[in-house]
Amino acid sequence: MRPHLLGIDDAPFDKRQAHETPIVGVMMEGPDLVEGVAIDAFPVDGDGATDYLARWVSGLRWHASLQAVVLGGVTIAGLGLVDLAALAERLGRPVLAVTRRDPSASRLASALRAAGLTDRLPILERLPPTRPLAEGLFLACAGADFAYAARLVRASLHKSRLPEPLRVAHLIGAALVNGASRGNV
Image (cartoon, rainbow, N blue to C red; front, side, top):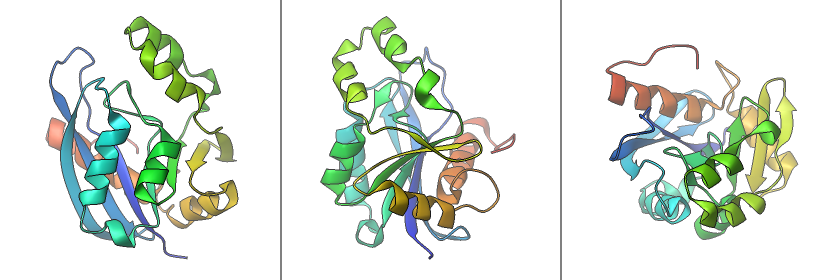
């Protein structure tokens, strides 16, 4: 299986910055063939992350060949909370949220409350459950059953525990902001 996956990640940002941060999308076939890169921007802690991603991804020329979208968690640009099920429905594709840490101990609800973003709590409450996929790899999915989503993720692993489209998007985002990528991804 060589799935066509779009990995989306935000670039590094300062929590106190008032402007947008780059959002990077990398389309890959399998774990080793980059087919396209797209860059846009989203406000730090911005509202409407689901609508933004639905519009952006739908407008990409490779939208028709996508088998799934892979996010590095359920937020972009800080507290921009993504409704995975709504995004999957709007795109007509599965949406997968992959993390290296177990989100059950997440303090996202507390962060939303502290930032005065309690209107986003209902999205958080209806997110699909996150389940372990492998040692240090957790997956939540919408628009597909867990077994199919797990096959897609496993087929896109190569160098690290993250799906390669997501890893490459992370590297590009870091290079955009810092001039070069660094660290273990």
